[in-house]
Image (cartoon, rainbow, N blue to C red; front, side, top):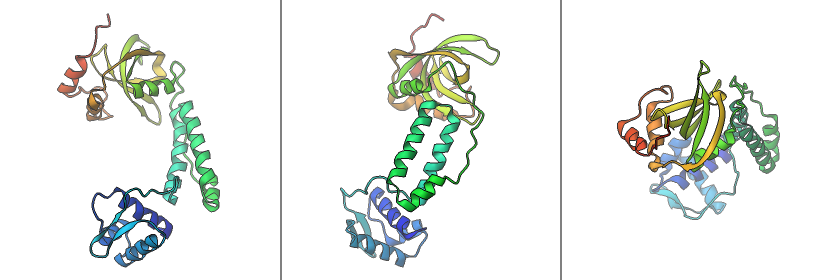
Length: 249
Protein backbone atom coordinates (compact mmCIF):
# COMPACT_ATOMS: atom_id res chain seq x y z
CA UNK A 1 0.00 0.00 0.00
CA UNK A 2 1.32 3.46 -0.87
CA UNK A 3 2.05 5.72 2.09
CA UNK A 4 -0.44 8.31 0.82
CA UNK A 5 -3.16 5.65 0.77
CA UNK A 6 -2.16 4.52 4.25
CA UNK A 7 -2.42 8.05 5.65
CA UNK A 8 -5.83 8.38 4.04
CA UNK A 9 -6.95 5.08 5.59
CA UNK A 10 -5.84 6.18 9.07
CA UNK A 11 -8.05 9.26 8.79
CA UNK A 12 -10.97 7.16 7.54
CA UNK A 13 -10.65 4.68 10.42
CA UNK A 14 -10.49 7.45 13.01
CA UNK A 15 -13.45 9.27 11.43
CA UNK A 16 -15.68 6.23 11.82
CA UNK A 17 -14.42 5.13 15.26
CA UNK A 18 -16.70 5.67 18.26
CA UNK A 19 -13.87 5.44 20.80
CA UNK A 20 -10.10 5.99 20.83
CA UNK A 21 -8.27 3.65 18.45
CA UNK A 22 -4.93 2.25 19.54
CA UNK A 23 -1.85 2.15 17.35
CA UNK A 24 -1.95 -1.65 17.60
CA UNK A 25 -5.48 -1.74 16.18
CA UNK A 26 -4.48 0.61 13.36
CA UNK A 27 -1.40 -1.49 12.63
CA UNK A 28 -3.47 -4.67 12.38
CA UNK A 29 -5.98 -2.98 10.06
CA UNK A 30 -3.25 -1.55 7.81
CA UNK A 31 -0.99 -4.63 8.02
CA UNK A 32 2.02 -2.59 9.12
CA UNK A 33 4.06 -2.30 12.31
CA UNK A 34 3.02 -0.20 15.29
CA UNK A 35 6.16 1.89 14.79
CA UNK A 36 4.96 2.73 11.25
CA UNK A 37 1.61 3.85 12.66
CA UNK A 38 3.37 6.14 15.14
CA UNK A 39 5.31 7.76 12.30
CA UNK A 40 2.21 8.12 10.12
CA UNK A 41 0.16 9.70 12.90
CA UNK A 42 3.00 12.13 13.62
CA UNK A 43 3.09 13.04 9.92
CA UNK A 44 -0.66 13.71 9.88
CA UNK A 45 -0.44 15.81 13.02
CA UNK A 46 2.40 17.82 11.44
CA UNK A 47 0.10 18.46 8.49
CA UNK A 48 -2.46 19.91 10.91
CA UNK A 49 -4.86 16.97 10.83
CA UNK A 50 -6.51 17.29 14.30
CA UNK A 51 -5.61 13.86 15.69
CA UNK A 52 -5.46 13.77 19.48
CA UNK A 53 -4.07 11.07 21.74
CA UNK A 54 -0.80 9.38 22.52
CA UNK A 55 0.97 6.01 22.22
CA UNK A 56 -0.50 3.47 24.62
CA UNK A 57 -3.74 5.42 25.01
CA UNK A 58 -5.22 5.63 21.53
CA UNK A 59 -6.09 8.24 18.97
CA UNK A 60 -9.22 10.19 18.09
CA UNK A 61 -10.01 12.59 15.27
CA UNK A 62 -11.41 15.88 16.52
CA UNK A 63 -15.00 16.49 15.41
CA UNK A 64 -15.61 18.83 12.53
CA UNK A 65 -12.61 17.71 10.48
CA UNK A 66 -13.35 16.63 6.95
CA UNK A 67 -11.26 15.68 3.97
CA UNK A 68 -11.39 17.64 0.73
CA UNK A 69 -13.94 16.04 -1.62
CA UNK A 70 -13.00 13.32 -4.10
CA UNK A 71 -9.79 12.09 -2.55
CA UNK A 72 -9.47 8.53 -3.83
CA UNK A 73 -7.07 5.68 -3.22
CA UNK A 74 -5.84 3.69 -6.21
CA UNK A 75 -8.19 0.82 -5.31
CA UNK A 76 -11.11 3.25 -5.20
CA UNK A 77 -10.19 4.61 -8.63
CA UNK A 78 -10.16 1.04 -9.96
CA UNK A 79 -13.55 0.38 -8.35
CA UNK A 80 -15.05 3.47 -10.01
CA UNK A 81 -13.69 2.49 -13.42
CA UNK A 82 -14.94 -1.11 -13.18
CA UNK A 83 -18.28 -0.09 -11.66
CA UNK A 84 -19.01 2.39 -14.43
CA UNK A 85 -18.36 -0.30 -17.03
CA UNK A 86 -20.62 -2.73 -15.19
CA UNK A 87 -23.48 -0.25 -15.59
CA UNK A 88 -23.43 -1.06 -19.33
CA UNK A 89 -25.03 -4.39 -18.47
CA UNK A 90 -28.11 -2.83 -16.92
CA UNK A 91 -29.82 -1.79 -20.18
CA UNK A 92 -30.90 1.34 -18.31
CA UNK A 93 -30.05 4.38 -20.49
CA UNK A 94 -30.43 6.94 -17.70
CA UNK A 95 -28.02 5.05 -15.44
CA UNK A 96 -25.57 4.60 -18.32
CA UNK A 97 -25.58 8.35 -18.97
CA UNK A 98 -25.15 8.99 -15.23
CA UNK A 99 -22.16 6.61 -15.10
CA UNK A 100 -20.49 8.44 -17.98
CA UNK A 101 -21.09 11.74 -16.18
CA UNK A 102 -19.53 10.37 -12.98
CA UNK A 103 -16.42 9.27 -14.90
CA UNK A 104 -16.06 12.72 -16.44
CA UNK A 105 -16.38 14.45 -13.05
CA UNK A 106 -13.89 12.12 -11.37
CA UNK A 107 -11.35 12.53 -14.17
CA UNK A 108 -11.38 16.33 -13.80
CA UNK A 109 -10.34 16.30 -10.12
CA UNK A 110 -7.76 13.51 -10.18
CA UNK A 111 -4.03 14.31 -10.08
CA UNK A 112 -2.39 14.26 -13.50
CA UNK A 113 -0.64 10.91 -13.07
CA UNK A 114 -3.77 9.20 -11.76
CA UNK A 115 -5.90 10.81 -14.45
CA UNK A 116 -3.73 9.29 -17.19
CA UNK A 117 -4.10 5.85 -15.61
CA UNK A 118 -7.85 6.39 -15.16
CA UNK A 119 -8.29 7.38 -18.81
CA UNK A 120 -6.71 4.12 -19.99
CA UNK A 121 -9.23 2.09 -17.93
CA UNK A 122 -7.25 -1.19 -18.14
CA UNK A 123 -10.31 -3.31 -17.42
CA UNK A 124 -12.80 -5.11 -19.61
CA UNK A 125 -16.35 -5.91 -18.54
CA UNK A 126 -18.62 -7.92 -20.84
CA UNK A 127 -21.93 -6.33 -21.75
CA UNK A 128 -24.05 -9.25 -20.57
CA UNK A 129 -27.09 -10.62 -22.36
CA UNK A 130 -30.11 -8.89 -20.80
CA UNK A 131 -32.72 -7.84 -23.37
CA UNK A 132 -33.49 -4.16 -23.83
CA UNK A 133 -36.99 -3.44 -22.44
CA UNK A 134 -39.30 -1.54 -24.76
CA UNK A 135 -42.53 -1.30 -22.71
CA UNK A 136 -41.12 0.44 -19.67
CA UNK A 137 -38.95 3.40 -18.66
CA UNK A 138 -36.60 2.10 -15.96
CA UNK A 139 -35.89 5.63 -14.76
CA UNK A 140 -39.60 6.04 -13.93
CA UNK A 141 -39.59 2.72 -12.10
CA UNK A 142 -36.64 3.74 -9.94
CA UNK A 143 -38.48 6.98 -9.19
CA UNK A 144 -41.57 5.03 -8.15
CA UNK A 145 -39.46 2.94 -5.76
CA UNK A 146 -37.95 6.07 -4.19
CA UNK A 147 -41.37 7.68 -3.74
CA UNK A 148 -43.40 4.56 -2.73
CA UNK A 149 -45.65 4.94 -5.76
CA UNK A 150 -47.73 2.03 -7.05
CA UNK A 151 -47.35 0.74 -10.61
CA UNK A 152 -49.96 -0.55 -13.01
CA UNK A 153 -48.49 -3.17 -15.37
CA UNK A 154 -49.60 -5.08 -18.41
CA UNK A 155 -47.47 -8.21 -18.08
CA UNK A 156 -46.85 -11.31 -20.20
CA UNK A 157 -45.46 -14.55 -18.75
CA UNK A 158 -43.19 -17.03 -20.54
CA UNK A 159 -46.23 -18.46 -22.42
CA UNK A 160 -47.25 -14.90 -23.40
CA UNK A 161 -50.34 -15.07 -21.17
CA UNK A 162 -51.35 -11.49 -20.36
CA UNK A 163 -52.39 -10.11 -16.98
CA UNK A 164 -52.78 -6.65 -15.52
CA UNK A 165 -51.15 -6.09 -12.16
CA UNK A 166 -51.02 -3.35 -9.57
CA UNK A 167 -47.76 -3.71 -7.72
CA UNK A 168 -45.76 -2.02 -4.98
CA UNK A 169 -42.22 -1.82 -6.40
CA UNK A 170 -39.61 -2.55 -3.73
CA UNK A 171 -36.29 -2.92 -5.57
CA UNK A 172 -34.56 -3.42 -8.90
CA UNK A 173 -32.54 -6.63 -9.29
CA UNK A 174 -29.95 -6.45 -12.06
CA UNK A 175 -28.53 -9.74 -13.35
CA UNK A 176 -26.27 -10.39 -16.34
CA UNK A 177 -29.09 -11.90 -18.38
CA UNK A 178 -32.22 -10.28 -16.97
CA UNK A 179 -33.47 -7.27 -15.01
CA UNK A 180 -36.25 -7.77 -12.45
CA UNK A 181 -38.61 -5.56 -10.47
CA UNK A 182 -39.11 -6.98 -6.99
CA UNK A 183 -42.58 -6.06 -5.73
CA UNK A 184 -45.61 -6.84 -3.63
CA UNK A 185 -48.36 -7.86 -6.07
CA UNK A 186 -51.92 -6.88 -5.12
CA UNK A 187 -53.40 -9.54 -7.44
CA UNK A 188 -51.46 -12.39 -5.80
CA UNK A 189 -51.22 -10.79 -2.32
CA UNK A 190 -47.60 -11.91 -2.24
CA UNK A 191 -44.10 -10.98 -3.30
CA UNK A 192 -43.41 -11.37 -7.00
CA UNK A 193 -40.59 -10.66 -9.46
CA UNK A 194 -41.36 -9.13 -12.87
CA UNK A 195 -38.96 -9.32 -15.79
CA UNK A 196 -38.76 -5.88 -17.36
CA UNK A 197 -38.51 -7.35 -20.88
CA UNK A 198 -41.96 -8.98 -20.38
CA UNK A 199 -43.69 -5.77 -19.30
CA UNK A 200 -45.84 -4.50 -22.18
CA UNK A 201 -46.89 -1.21 -20.54
CA UNK A 202 -46.23 0.41 -17.18
CA UNK A 203 -47.84 3.42 -15.56
CA UNK A 204 -46.81 5.09 -12.32
CA UNK A 205 -49.94 5.74 -10.26
CA UNK A 206 -50.64 8.71 -8.02
CA UNK A 207 -51.53 6.27 -5.25
CA UNK A 208 -48.74 5.45 -2.81
CA UNK A 209 -48.15 2.37 -0.71
CA UNK A 210 -47.04 2.40 2.96
CA UNK A 211 -43.32 2.14 3.61
CA UNK A 212 -43.99 0.34 6.92
CA UNK A 213 -40.61 1.32 8.28
CA UNK A 214 -38.85 -0.92 5.77
CA UNK A 215 -40.66 -4.12 6.77
CA UNK A 216 -41.73 -4.89 3.20
CA UNK A 217 -38.15 -4.58 2.00
CA UNK A 218 -36.90 -6.67 4.92
CA UNK A 219 -39.47 -9.35 4.11
CA UNK A 220 -38.33 -9.48 0.51
CA UNK A 221 -34.67 -9.71 1.51
CA UNK A 222 -35.56 -12.56 3.87
CA UNK A 223 -36.82 -14.62 0.92
CA UNK A 224 -33.38 -14.89 -0.65
CA UNK A 225 -33.05 -13.54 -4.16
CA UNK A 226 -32.76 -17.06 -5.56
CA UNK A 227 -36.24 -17.98 -4.29
CA UNK A 228 -38.70 -15.55 -5.92
CA UNK A 229 -41.72 -17.81 -5.34
CA UNK A 230 -41.18 -18.37 -1.62
CA UNK A 231 -43.80 -17.10 0.84
CA UNK A 232 -42.91 -14.02 2.92
CA UNK A 233 -42.87 -14.07 6.71
CA UNK A 234 -46.40 -14.27 8.08
CA UNK A 235 -46.27 -10.92 9.87
CA UNK A 236 -45.06 -9.12 6.72
CA UNK A 237 -47.75 -10.78 4.61
CA UNK A 238 -50.47 -9.78 7.06
CA UNK A 239 -49.18 -6.23 7.33
CA UNK A 240 -48.99 -5.72 3.57
CA UNK A 241 -52.28 -7.45 2.82
CA UNK A 242 -54.10 -5.17 5.26
CA UNK A 243 -53.28 -2.24 2.97
CA UNK A 244 -54.40 -3.90 -0.30
CA UNK A 245 -57.66 -2.63 -1.72
CA UNK A 246 -59.82 -4.81 -3.98
CA UNK A 247 -58.82 -4.31 -7.61
CA UNK A 248 -61.80 -6.01 -9.22
CA UNK A 249 -59.66 -8.89 -10.52
